[in-house]
Amino acid sequence: MPRHVLRTARALADATPTYAFVSTTAVYRSWEAPGQDESAPTWPGRADQEGDASDLAKLAVHKRGCELAVEQVFGDAALVARAGSIVGPHDNLGQLPAWLARAAAGGRMVAPGDPGRGLQLIDARDLAAFVLDQVEAKAGGLHNAVADGPNTTMGGLVDACVQATGASADPVWIDEAFLLSHGAAPWTELPFWIPDAPTTAGFWAVSGAQARAAGLRTRPFAETVQDTWEWLRSGGEVRPAPGSPSFGLPAEKERRLLDEWAAAAELR
Image (tube, rainbow, N blue to C red; front, side, top):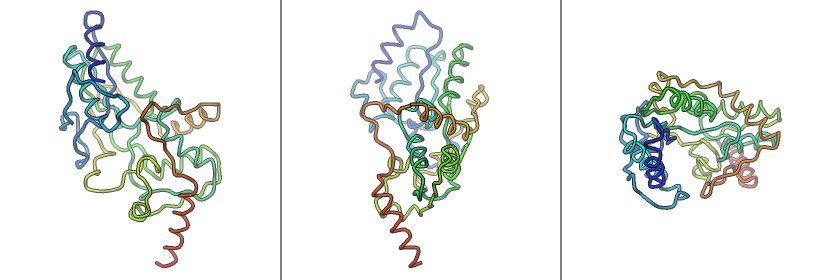
């Protein structure tokens, strides 16, 4: 919560030259324009705001308030890294692990929309390295901590999960309109799936040019997928924060979608 960050920043103001805060690109008000940079309009926020941190409906407003709290105390010495969707070993949200678990189960599996739809995901280890490098250099600033452009696709994600698990999964790519009309939930039941629309054209295309110029480096996405699978196989477990949704398509619902898609195909 912003007020917690504000108190922390004030407590450390005389003890440290830099304060780093990992924020989110969710602070941006609109996703219509691809390539938006750090100057794009954000949701409003207050540095002294209190409330319930588990209320994810207010995540964007709360995160913006946290940014303002750090900037209020540290000024130009504040480092704010607006991360995109974070993935990798020790995942505490569960979107990539949900795809890996489904691929490992094998058989026909629902794959949403256009396999060529770009995704912009960042490995937690790459984000951490960037933040630590900036802190060691005592470099403040505001950065979109994302790959500079999509670094994989929906098809690349699904294929990487199938290859990493070595399972005999068979992705069935289903039209977005069909999925929506049959009750499939974007983002949660089919993680990372954001339906293609004018209002979401820039969701997976935020500019990461400034962070790249400052030293952000991102590893190949397939490496992240493989390492996440190895972590899960070695006993890794997703432990979501309070308020986080569950991810993955229920098996019965998936079977129904696949059967109805096959039946619709026979009529086309």
